[in-house]
Length: 121
Image (spheres, rainbow, N blue to C red):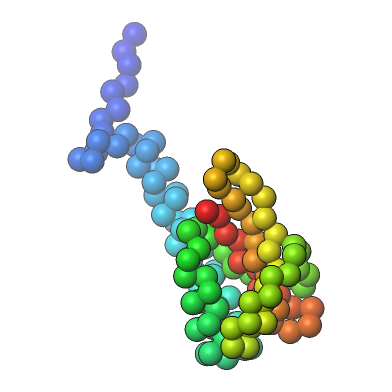
């Protein structure tokens, strides 16, 4: 019985690993495009200063696990942190490992309109 020999690429990756890597890259690219569109929408709604302060607040985030989105409702507990036009944000989180957390941060844009930023550490 002949077995098919899967030859690795120059980096030593099999075809399946290469395909998986391409899917991850495509997903990352799509997530970045969707997040960028939401960032443009937030900046159009709240202004350049709001976006600059928001980006500064989020600079320490380890990983954005899903695209940002604008939602009608928030979840979690309010954390008061006045920075310019941002009075604070809501935090919804859960433990995913011994020292790892995932969750969402919600920033109010207008009454009934929130920016949801999915995060992981």
